[in-house]
Image (cartoon, rainbow, N blue to C red; front, side, top):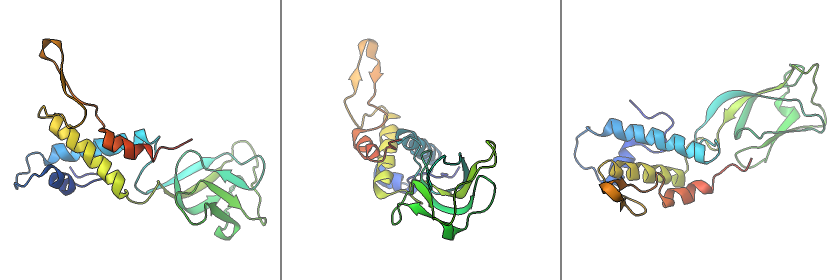
Length: 193
C-alpha cells in the first residue's frame, strides 16, 4: 500500500522513530498509521483537509447581496462557476475572498452580474480546488508524525505521552491517542463553522 493524502511519508516516520535497518517488516503498519493519523487530524480540525481536492460543490442561491459564503469546506481556486440559472459566470465577474490569502471563504460577484435562480431546484455550482492548503504545512506534518510515533510505540507497550497506568488486574492503560504536542498544533487549525 502507498499512503494516499497522508501528511507525512513513510521515510519521515521511520527516520523519526530511528529505524535504521533496511527491514520493511513494519512499513505497511506505519503507512496505515500515517493514513489513520492524517484522517484523524481531518476530523479533529472539523473536516479541514491539508491536501488539494478537485470537486464540485453546490450552494443555494444567496437571497440577498452579491456574496456567496462558503461555510462547508475550504476553497483554494474556482475553475468553473455556474449561476442558479445554469449560466456560466466569467472569472471577470467575481472574486474570491480573501483576495491575497488561502483558504477562501466567499465568492463575491461584481456589480455587472447578480445571483439568479429560476426555481428552487437550481443551485450555484462551484467547481474547483478545495482544501486548506495544497500540501500539509510543516506543523501538521509534525503532528502526524507525533501521533504515528505514539501509536507505534504503544504497539510495543511503550507510552510516549502522558503516564502509563497499570490498573487493577494488571491491565495496562495507555496514554491518549493524540499526544498533547500534536493536539496543540491541531487546535490552531480547527474550523470555526
